[in-house]
Image (cartoon, rainbow, N blue to C red; front, side, top):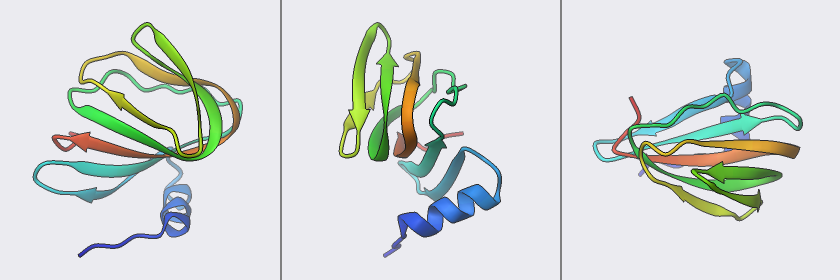
Length: 105
């Protein structure tokens, strides 16, 4: 078993001065914590993997392809591989668990 604490992961991500911290990588998936502060821009490009977002905290809009939805704590969104997507109008610091399948990179 591998167990993690979100507060510790966020501290590690912050110490590494990055918006994304991959903290689990297995044969069929990887998991990371993505953080964007209120008012920030989301620079990500489409990925080659399917991904699932679970919003842990914060508030923003998320556009996937041509569809836009508001996300907040508890929101779960599936993004198909190759689909353009980005968070925007981030009104509260955003913390998102990201699951990639197959593993990212």
